[in-house]
Length: 349
Image 1 (tube, rainbow, N blue to C red):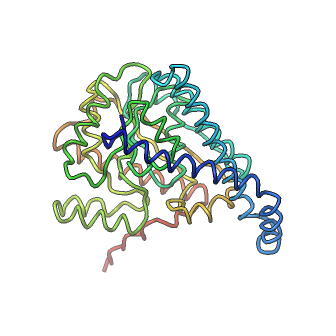
Image 2: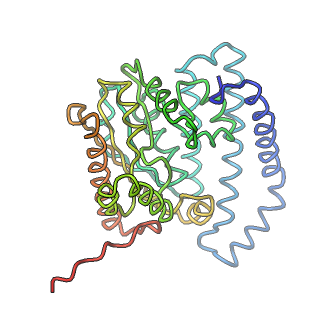
């Protein structure tokens, strides 16, 4: 069932999103003889070494047809009675994510280095990845269902239902499309706990604890909101330079549903500044030769407190991840356009 509880609303949404996707895919493909020479000449004049617009539009073609092909596979699964198979849906999801990352590898020169893959074994686990870009949502889930070989129960924002593949496949799996502006947040938390209840071997729950992609405006707004309720916590989290302040309620609810699951925290570098579509427009064409470093670490459940102490633990963990990200960026010679400024140093005099 759709997260808004209305089959009619779901049908109406898909009657718009699916035709729009097909029309975009057809237009990009059929008009290649027209737009490709034009943007290629433009790029050769403006940025001959990077060809930014050409790369971006070529990736757009790949993305649209990966989505269309995935919808065909999902339709065939429905016709053959496999729409309710979580294993089969995971297989299609893994194919979709792998194809998108492969398109980025070929067109944009992106490479991915994975460290700590053994952190996902044994399972079940609750995975708390860093969220810095539109791309890392695909990357983080791919890590779970691809290299780690697990089924993922993922928390997604409801706005992503505009993507037909995420809409169809996501609602056939034990995911939850969270309403971040819900009038009844307790109902959302109850849904998250229910989502992870009964998780056994071969399953991971995935939630982006920050709740949104990091940038200076969002970080300042989040800190101001926290300061209204807990000034001491806000002051502590002002040390964050790259990550957003974590939201403990959702992660705590998922952990409550899976009391035996260990925690996997993960960070990455290489996707900084790609938190918006405009950032992707600027970032994808500059990927040539860039390596995305993805690092996962396991935390035994015995080290994860409950109740009020959980918030302090999550804050300390996030501050530690932020320091790791900062050190990794410096070592790689990378910059984060969304980093907070260095905190002022006190005058020893």
